[in-house]
Length: 201
Image (cartoon, rainbow, N blue to C red):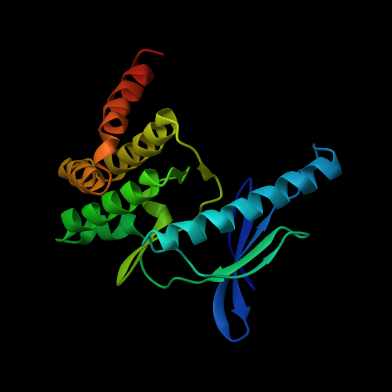
C-alpha cells in the first residue's frame, strides 16, 4: 500500500482489495484523548462518514463505493476513483461552467437532504465521466442554515482562490444549486453575510 495523504484526522492509502484498486482511510489515534473516548469518537465518525456517502449516492450524488468498514480499527475501504480533481479541470477546461453546474447541482441535492459535506473544495471532487464527491470525513446531518451557509462559503472561497479569473464559476454553481434546491435561497444569502463577518473581524 502507498500513502496518498496524511492529515490530522486520517491517513489515506492506495491499495488493492480483492483485486480492486481501493482507497483505505484509517482514522488516526489521538494520544491526547483518553483511549476509550478516542476509540468511541473515531468509530462514530467512521460510521457516520460511510453512512453519509451511502445516503448521498441514493440522492444521485456520485461518491466512492464502500467495500468494507472496520469500526474497531476505524478503517474504511472504498472505491478508488480514477481521474483528475475538479480544481485541475476547472483551470484547463473550456467546459468549466458546465462542470461548475455539476458541482452546484450535487451540493444542492446534499443540502436538500440536510447533508453537510464539511470540506467543499474542488480538491475533494474527482471527474470520471461524472462528478464524484470524496472525503466526507467532516460531514454531518443538519438542518441548520448556518452549516449549509458555511459549506457553500467554503466552496465559494475555494473557487475564488484557485480560479479568481473566472468569477462566473460561482454564479454557475449558484444557479444549479438553486435548481436542485429552490428552498436554498436563504443559504445563498447567508454566504454573503458570512463573507462580511470575515471582513470585519
